[in-house]
Length: 356
Image (cartoon, rainbow, N blue to C red):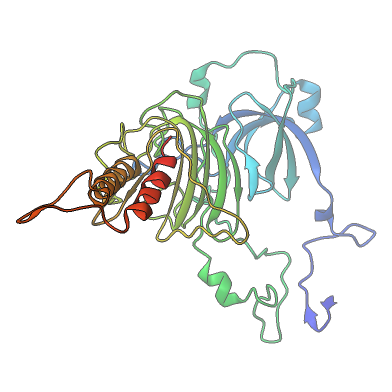
């Protein structure tokens, strides 16, 4: 039995005459995407996928000579970073044991008969020999033909990647994608997704806007689909969409804004979490707006234009009193200029200098 230090390694399933595992050699094919396997769960986001596609491939020499192809399923070979292809795209496929995995899309190539397939052909579903798993777990750390065990026969994953840690992240499922999306996802529920607005896809940004406009979704959360209500933190970069905030309850917005957050349609960046901290270690933090700047809390909804207009007006009225331009009426006559009139005049000048 081979060992790695003091740890035994289970033997591979087979080897060639030179003693090398037969699984070390990959068969590579070109294939065309026949269908993208989409979710059939009525409660899930419409038309979402975990990466599985149905392909037409010539993986047998006899099929290649006859110009025929077979139908089968393929999964992304890099489940952490891939683009979900669309129907009719050409892809590179590799075979590992009895399963096929696609790598990336390539320029169109003819690997099937040139006859066009009618849409009804998609209804002729391919039945796999083994049932397909409903969801794909992202944090996959075991493989039945290769496993390192400790002295007690328990799987070993690493120094800090303990079996308890694996169990804690066992339920993390692959993000749901739509056709054409590109995903970069980690093991623990974090992801960056390059997608777009499409009225056929039920997403927080699918309510209003133009189809085909780009969206970038960055988030930390366990759910397979975007949900600002349950995600731990998120950043959405939209180009021409509105955004559905779900069940999040906000402090009241200032009444002066043209469109409230939940109805605004256009390019916008949405950042959310339980707490936000902005820190500048060396230089400034600047907030610049072509229009209004509003800050809302549970008690105040502040429009900075209105606030500063009122501060300026208040300062001018107090300055008028201190200079005797406006007076208090007393029993013996009006009051004279105040001793702090010069100081207050400077304050008014500085406030006026901030006005644009």
